[in-house]
Image 1 (cartoon, rainbow, N blue to C red):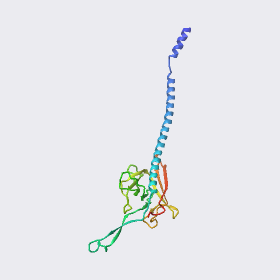
Image 2: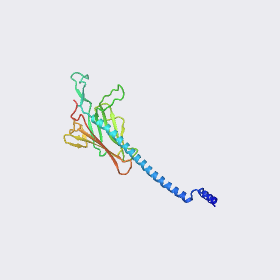
Image 3: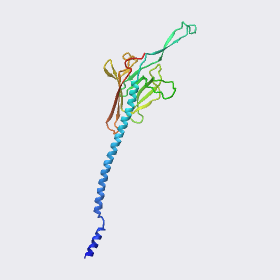
Image 4: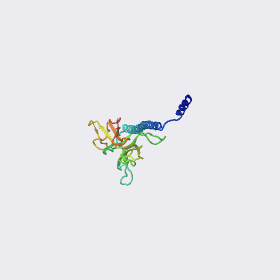
Length: 249
C-alpha cells in the first residue's frame, strides 16, 4: 500500500496545469500587458506633445529674438541729397546752368496694420557682413510681411527680406525667408511717447511721425496647439529702440 501511494502521488505531480489554470494565467497576462501598454502609450503621447510644444516655443523664441534685434537697431537720418548740374541753354553745363538736388538715400520706419497679418519695413544697423571685403556696412533695409501658407490652410508664414544697402526708396527687395511658419496671427504695436500709448501703425513719411521712431515695439504671434482643437499658443516680446530720441545728423 505504501508503494502504491507513492506511485500515485508521483503521477499526480507530473500531470501539469489544468485547462482552467492555463486560461486564468493567460487572462492575467493579458490584463497585465494591457495595463503596461496603456501606461506606455500615455507616456509616449505626453512625450510627443511636450516635444511638439517645445519645438513651437523654440522656433518662436528664435524668431522673436531676431525680430527684436533687427528692430532695436532701427535708425533714421536726415535725408541725404546730391547736387547735379544741368546744361545751360547753350547745351553745356556752364556756371549759369541750373542745379538739381536729388535724394541719394532714404531712411524710414513704416508699420502697417493689416488686421492679424501686420507688416513692417525699416532701415536698421543690424546687417551682418558674411563675405570678406564685401561692399557692405551695418546699414540695411529690412521688411517683415505675412503670406498665406501653401501647405496648411488658414495658417500663415512670416517672411523676412533684407537688402544690405540704402536707396532712395522705402521698398525692400531681396529673397524672402520664412522666419515663422504656421502662425495664426502676427501683430505689431508701436509705443508713441508723445501720446503715451501703443498704436497700431507708424509711418515716418507722414507728418505725425516724420523723423521720429517709436520708443518701443511689441511683437506678438499666435500658434495653433500641436494637439489640435481650438487651443492656441500665444507668444510675445517687446524691445526698445536705442535711436528713438531722434534722427541722426
